Image (cartoon, rainbow, N blue to C red; front, side):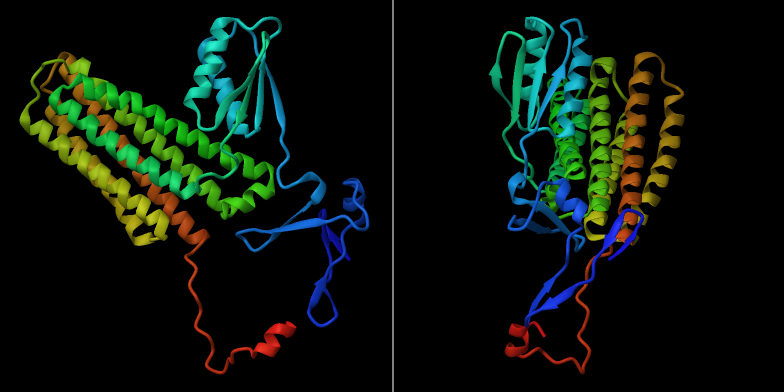
Length: 363
């Protein structure tokens, strides 16, 4: 055995014709109450390592988290606290107050449960509300969550610009309300990654490495920010009111929005396919959008009052969306370098396929 920096090395030994064994550190076995005859489970991970856990604990233990709050807490402060507890990834959350829970506090907890993915009210008492995560640890692959977020964000961008062009307050309200859908997916992804960091067994079910989890979490954050800017564009509708916007400026803003949307789509594509040239093109396009911004900004110098303010908000949000797409392009480059696409290496000409007998014996 070799030991260095808290890591224990074990030599692989071979017994019989095809069985390989290693010994376990004595302190690790005893500290977990294990002994001869106990069963260990091995879970392969995406990076090629193995996770070991004992049969007695099961693959996932149900953990209860008691969250003590007060009836005097501000509604937003309480909601943020509940989001943080949700992201921590505990299957059971017991929200408890010292004394009877007020109707206002209970309503915040119920509203939280309705907005998040997973929590359902399991039990209510005079002093507590117990929430249980009913969706499990890995109901939806993380890459699929990011793709879904992208679809929603692109639709929000398009509708935000439609509400701006038509001064349509109903479309604007719809964009603002849909921001919650993007937020809840982002928080759900955060919860999955946090759970994976706390428990390697959960990480094994994600079929991603820790660096890949970090990459997708960053991408999710970028998409959530772009959704916020779509909301900001929609919020300019009441500011602009019925004031007429010059057709030329509207056309230029539309072109800018289209380029920002294309940059975002290309950035996501370069992330999934580890395409460095496409990611660099996204970053370059953000610089070109800045030049467009300067031209439109010059046009706005002749405008006054709420019209100038509203158009400036739209312009800034489009530029920020483009730069967030640029950030995503940089994330894609980092992923491509850190984890290049796996390619099957050609077999050497002299290599021979193993015979059935050799494969069966483990030779």
